[in-house]
Length: 94
Image (cartoon, rainbow, N blue to C red; front, side):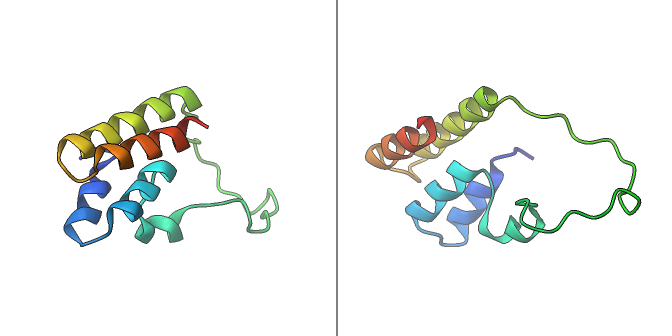
């Protein structure tokens, strides 16, 4: 399953093109928000933290390229119009 399949799922569930564009820009679907750590929760003391391997950090340039590639696939599939694609691409590249 692709990292960007949620965009197709959003389309199938009836989300608007603007909502899909927003989700592509942030990289997750609205229903995934509850699983994302935005850093606004208090930190647990280190004794409570589980020792686990942290996922490798993805370079911002790679994330940007993947987001634009996903947006292009949505445009080609007819989910996004060209103006919507260009507006989202401009927002991503800011």
